[in-house]
Image 1 (tube, each protein chain N blue to C red):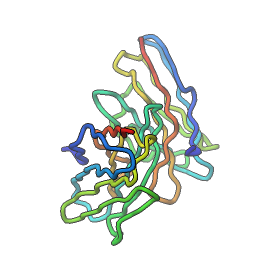
Image 2: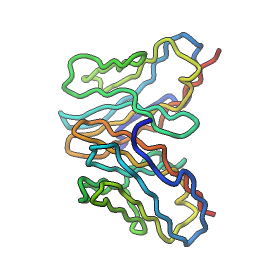
Image 3: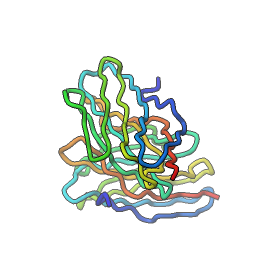
Image 4: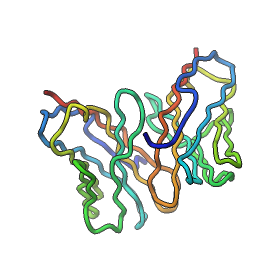
Length: 114
Length: 111
């Protein structure tokens, strides 16, 4: 069964606007971590933000924030004030406490227009 | 720069051959993970080592093997290569925290 679902294969956003990338997850664990990574066209995987399942506050890192809705099992990434350099593929991932690996979604491609 | 290094960046080889991918984790990180990214399978976990010992195994083929050395660098060996093994291979490392930091990847092309 798919553990991470990213339903938006591609999105366009205007420079300086905000964009929300959807991510839903499936787990029966109470303890887990959620991650977002960015993969530019050059190929590297860049860690953006982390949210623990017991964290009460939504995580924020600069222009990135994670909208964590535990009951709905969603962990959407919000990028504020989009920049041209934000054009990339974005992956949502989960690590369940019983596991060591990251399970990744299929990714969402974001294209920022000037 | 994540602090994780991988060599080589690119590798072109022929079917049936064997290659070795190398990874050096971030300073102080004891855990090393290997992932494969392909167009049809997406990002898949292969294997994890912790301080020299295998800790978890994912969808790793029998033709593939890995090890972590006393200096904590890791190698992923791919043998009897097939066209379908062409992919981007990532190494990641983690320390005491949850976050896995990825290296730049090795892009393997099997012809």
